[in-house]
Length: 280
Image (cartoon, rainbow, N blue to C red; front, side, top):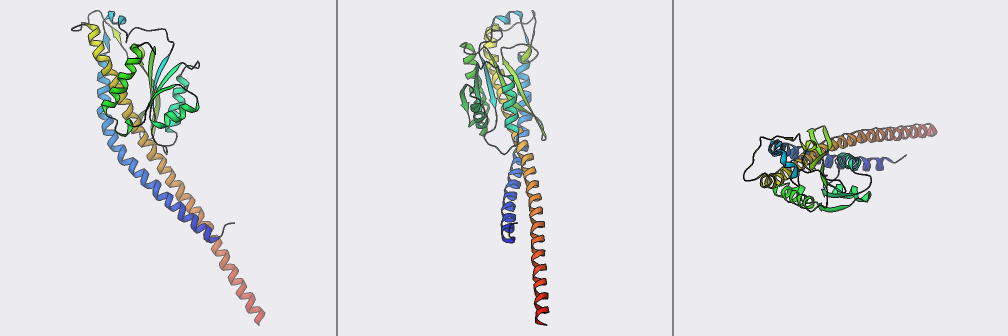
């Protein structure tokens, strides 16, 4: 059994860790409030971008972003966090993405966040590009650059379909891993219907060439903000749990210290009584 001195050192060490966990939880809570405000603005923007492509003329099927292809290679944008200490937030998302990917291994993966890159490297996945620093700011320009890169891959025929994997924020206690289809446009990417009455100026192809990059940028940006918000919520809950665990450990160590001290006091009293008996 450890000595009283060792128990006191352990209590002090756990107490320091508890303070750090509590501070990290408070920081995450403050960031969560700020990120939720950004999310409330990003969601309508992404929804409106999808609505722009909700109804298309019949001849839109001839456009490269709409026409289905024989799938030989798929692109995946996987959004995770740059840091840990957020429970199973990253691992749940990676497992969801891996379950969606083709077992043949013909995927080309774009990672946003360092943790996703680390996880997918363990599975020897083909990571063609990584963006680790964009989550620190998550500007729309960053999402537009990633969307342009994805569109270029698709136009060049290097990939035949594209998906985005991210954690959708539902509440502070619930983040749901999702894999949504981005390209080609169709019923899977957001209830697109075809109408013979639709007309676009100057031409349909010019409209799609302009609208699809906006749709990709808005969708990627909203997914990034969803992920950042979910990350802060997951970290806040994880730090709250760690703080409570530290409190429980300190209580148990305190009880052990008190028992040890009581035993020492009892032993000293017994020695004094025995000594007095011998003297008499």
